[in-house]
Length: 268
Image (cartoon, rainbow, N blue to C red; front, side):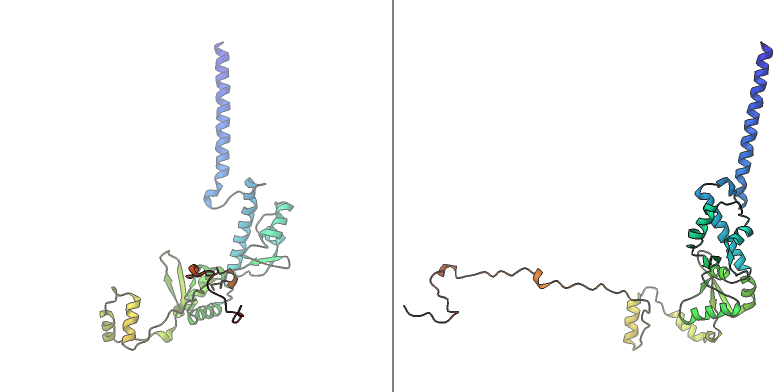
């Protein structure tokens, strides 16, 4: 009897150890996403698998565009280069008819695809022209992320431009590129700088400043942004107005007064 109990206890421990080993193996297999990659096959048949494939394709197309490979590819070429050859016909059809065709970051032409950045920039001259245009039109700078997305080998190009461009870091840590117009660089007399800084305007709002400038005969710069268009009020139709009622005061003479609107009545 004791031998039988010992045998069953040993068998139970072996089964428990096997289950724990399988669970550990499964956890290790599913934890590959911690290093930045994920197992697409584990999501096979789900919507997560489809969108995982789409994200991988878009990221790959962006990377190849940034290294200078801007020519268009067929879907089969894309799947071959991204090692997604095991997807089914249903997913391929979805990619061709919907996912890639309607993606704002993918340009589709005659059944071929390429990455579509916000700004198409070929070289440093194109970047400099774009920044100069933004400066002339008062549009400000361009996000470094957008430049890196659309300009192949952007790091080398930006370094080559040197002091022709300048950077500004926003509060959210994102960098913005500006055209460095050297014609606007001039020295301001130190005495004038002291006079400028000595005028306190912290406690004065813009309306009071504008009023003061007008009194001094100085015109201030008006707001150049788009003006709000007020909605046109519809006129009410005359027929919809209520008729005005007038109060009568000769009710006590009813039957005594005669109507002469059609001339003098004949004598009886």
